[in-house]
Length: 211
Image (cartoon, rainbow, N blue to C red; front, side):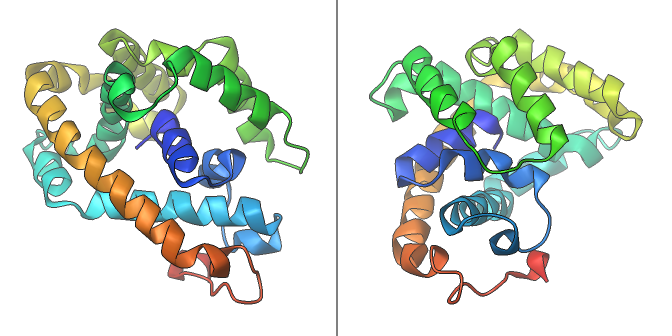
């Protein structure tokens, strides 16, 4: 899942929005770098990533990608899932997407703790170019993949993913509509079962990626 899904799931679980958005830019134990509420949001983001990657439908889709682009299939899927979430937004949230994005932006821009420069650059572009609203258009996802491929040579294969996503558009959408409610339920259960421990640093045990 990409930015929109992580923000939606943070809101769904009543977790810290900035923590969930910041997670991809933080390495190691977040409790050594941020306040407990933010660190807990980072941990929720990591749970979401691990859960979705473990799902049999996602594993099957990754194997369906042609070998030349299979290495970047996870990124392409994360992007297209956000498109379907934006497209079906009213199914999953009470607020219109525009209102949710405005509310999220206000909260995130009010965040006062230090953040990596790369995160700051990303969020600036995200708000200025209205990425989260543009996700409603499949073409915007294709353009985003092309931009990522151009910025990072190791991900050049992303530019070749749009034809696959277009060919399998309806089937991928069907998978999303099965996967996302499952992810919402799993995320809320994880948060409810672990919230007390996650917001108390002395009780939070580092996961393997934090050691």
